[in-house]
Length: 382
Image 1 (cartoon, rainbow, N blue to C red):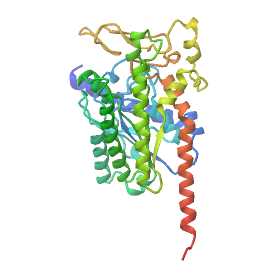
Image 2 (cartoon, rainbow, N blue to C red):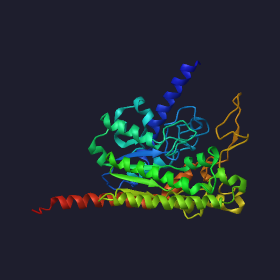
Image 3 (cartoon, one colour):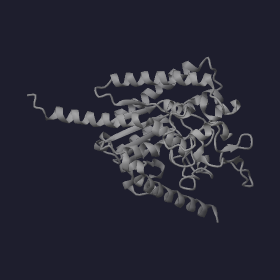
Image 4 (cartoon, one colour):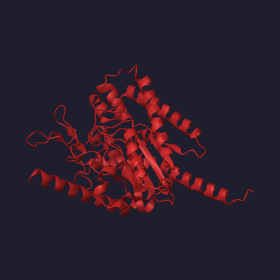
């Protein structure tokens, strides 16, 4: 098979999996049970690999086997073995997972009715070593879709934006720019300032509700815990996390003081992670959390399912002869982390379930705001 045929076959498979994902999400128990009648019917996503469902090009590791092995059985561009946070948040709204903007021309235009995903794995608010659109550019692409008439003002008035960012900025700071721990707080202020401008811009284009996720506990990701035998988190990095999230919450408060309807909200990804790791999230259908945390499991909680066997290799890497440079655990459903950065589908289900009460409050708050506005408009004050 020549290169053109391979590419055509791969694109066809990608289209097929997107339709399969739509079928799954539209018929899942989540979609049936979690729609609370909210007028929010569109979801826009900005940020990094925690939300990216296939925007990165086919050379990125997320398009390699074994990514997607749990669902749908082959890679979809998601950085996991199956569904990720985006899919579960969309299901909480009772909608299908928004399509990646880079795949829009490959499918029916009606697919944009649920919103669109602009997130790119490896990106941050600033440029990183990954040559993909940073947050500002992602928003500019979104604005172009609005200018082109893909989304109307009415559409935006029924929309929510969810933003996940900053981890890659700090990875860039420490590993590429050789930043110091002493200079971290000054750099963090720059990140928060840029993020604040980005959130304001999303709101300014007309999005009804803008939700910013706190930064996940970087010190607990396998990338940082492997030198600790995957048994405990890196405390200095956790302290950095807490500082960042404190500044982030203050930034959201400042943004809300600029408005009358408080459209900016925090979704606490950090606390959800910690809840699951402390086994308080174990009731969220995460089958392996108790098993993994038990002494007889033989596997530390923070050890990923997919690990590289060669220096500088990654999950999904192969050598020039196509030989795998990674190993897999027996069952991803029994493991919190998929690779050194990302949760498994089962892990994401537990984490998203831990966030569900807060997410439900956001949805109910929107209903209350709409009803209050409607009642006020119906009263004659003349």
